[in-house]
Image (cartoon, rainbow, N blue to C red):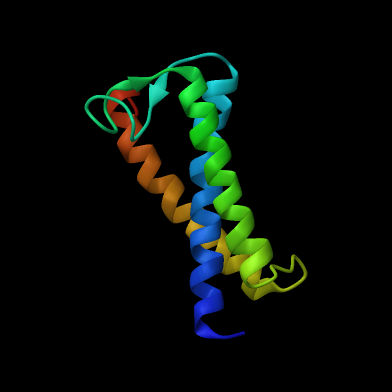
Length: 104
């Protein structure tokens, strides 16, 4: 595995983790923060914007994990690097969204 495969796995995991809250909140019909709100990242975007944003993040995760380097679930290194990217993004999102929902 080349060094840039690890970078693709890391960011694939990060995009996957970012897709989940946007997509799920959008599907449930609730407004949520997104980069397209006013002010960006703080204001609320409509549910449909979050569904589209979450879907786009799923596409990026798929491209980075499945098409760029060929992610394999049986390879621990692939799983650990993608998991580290997902965990890093999840921690950043918990801090960012925690300001608005009492998580800090």
